[in-house]
Length: 282
Image (tube, rainbow, N blue to C red; front, side, top):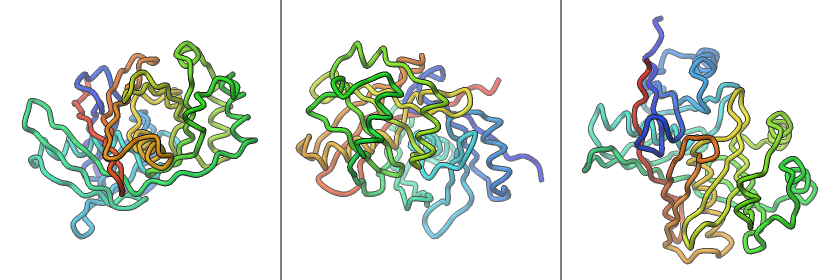
């Protein structure tokens, strides 16, 4: 069988040099797990999305990083929806993901296709004190660096994301970490997504650094599942008054700025919006 067409999109940006690159295979029906993992490693983006066919009204989709399958990937979902809308026309798409059905609405009323996915129902759990201290130590941080208005938690909206909010912008910009050590603790805890480190820069505006060491990648430029998880975290802890909206800026620290818009309803899944632009394969 010949290799499928592999599309490349940058998500949560209008600039191919910004946002989070994702591979997209719109017809992966002939691929097995080994082939999808191989393609994801060759593409070498944080994730590549594979559309495997239709189940009822939904397209079955799976996501692979260069090293393993990932249960859900927000930026690759946005990229896939934009690619489909550009080829089939804007509208509503349904993806049957490993974590449940995700609905994506697309709109092409201006120059770009904009996409909004609604996450699975979010959940928030306690952060084990020993593991929290270990993570902070790996980032050369202390509990004194945390913003006491926003307690550390593990938030889920497709992937489990540790959420750490830092009080000081200088500390947020300057912290460093060993990718190997961070990868090790993430694997030991079963964190398939990112470690989400945030700083509040305005009443409803956040900046995020999402740690995701896979191969040459250390930080994720834009993380849709972490954005949804933050929305669930803010709602669960009563830190917003739904319906509410927040904006997340991410990727500045690695030279690929992105913007993620998050809508937090009173109940149900969190809505994450953005656009995506094709990357010239040449």
